[in-house]
Length: 189
Length: 189
DNA sequence: TCCTTAAACTAACACTTGTTAGTTAGTGTT
DNA sequence: AACACTAACTAACAAGTGTTAGTTTAAGGA
Image 1 (cartoon, rainbow over the protein chains, first blue to last red):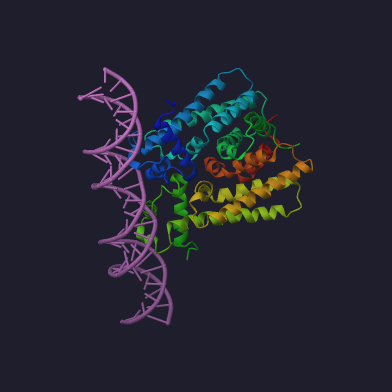
Image 2: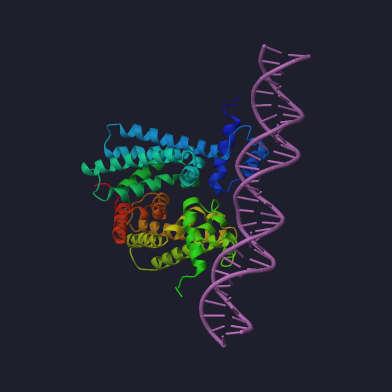
């Protein structure tokens, strides 16, 4: 009736715990206690611990993939594409603070779906790199090794989940703008 | 005779495994197998699994603290201090690729030494923030929320351990310079 | 040769892990 | 009244967990 199933509640709670201790350190009994039930009862709603991790990570990874495809196929300039990527990360991260922790730190425990995840991530990085390269080619972006730029920007964006909750005034548009300015124009006067 | 004790070998091997799977997912039997011995034999050299983690993380954290204190007490301009911080991270990260993974991802499992670690980290971030703030005050650095700048730069530097091993031509001076340019002057033309 | 030390071993312990089986209680539907 | 569904429960299992105790083996110094 509430539109949120018990299964979704469990997955959300699990993501919260995973963020604090990591997938491996969270036991099904920890999760059950956080839900106020016994460990065995979890299995009325989910198939396995592994399945919870998959549900958290894969849906997020696919969300990023879809966002990147939209940006890539637009007619924006490279700098504008970059700004849209920053907005994409701010949006998804702020809506999935806990899930982003698993995406960043626990993907290696995706046993069956590991390859698929890695494919999505590699594709995403390649698309990102291509945008930077064509920006360099067109003279929009400074001609430094695109690998270092990619690393610097993407790492910052991937860690947003750690910092967004610390800001009391979470004005997301303002955060996107500040980030765009800092990542693109630097901090020099 | 070799200058490297068996204990140090174990800690180095552990750090390597911790980087790939995380502290909690690595068992003493995994570690023993990687060393070519039985799990019980590890205890001739180390006191506990926990102690291995502490040895990895605390020494690294203290290295950063010492580096920051040197930079802080110098007479350099804020931008030059920033460049030195970047060099500090590149140097320590390249020399401790595996340990940096634990420092970043497994610090929450430092049971007894958790508070001490958190103190070191908080102090480091405060010193870093102060440098940015005085750079803003003196007009060296653009007047955007220092919190977002700190986040962006520090996150990039903390993740260096993930990217340095991917570069075949690990010219560390060149990497420091590229990073300084990107982080300080941005990527815009 | 005797003693010490480093570094491995086997065997076992108490506890924790994810998971399954079978059951029960409440709620709504036919 | 009979049924099905949801969601909890107790009890248990097989495997794996960190760790301890006690023993063995090889090398070097006295």
